[in-house]
Image: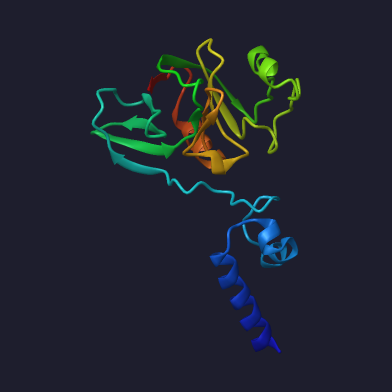
Length: 193
């Protein structure tokens, strides 16, 4: 019986790996039984874009954050021509921007108050949401000057690598927690279009 159970679990695991990761397509209770790392709606938790140290050819000095909007990547510049490269989500068409800011504030599990401009476009949004895993700002937020924009985590990791935000720079929660520890208030942020 144990051998049969092991064979069934192995076959089910192989089948699940070949199917799209959707709770409805896979069968929600089997996902729970196999303890896969999926969100409640079946989407994977982690981004497919891995954080890595790369060669950096920009002119910005160590400690600078460079957002390459067209690449959908953020670089934290290190010494010796290196940088940590992260995947990011960026502003959707009409919400792209470029320029320089500095980190003016940092928050862990920040509360979210949608700006007035966003509420005009989306009156269905809550006026306030306490920090936590369901909050769209994710685990950390780095506020950019006096602008409406932030570099923040996301409770939608599948949006990393896409242009879907209202101008903020989205990262996975793991990546924004890493960046949060490296970047200090006052860090220069360069956003390239």
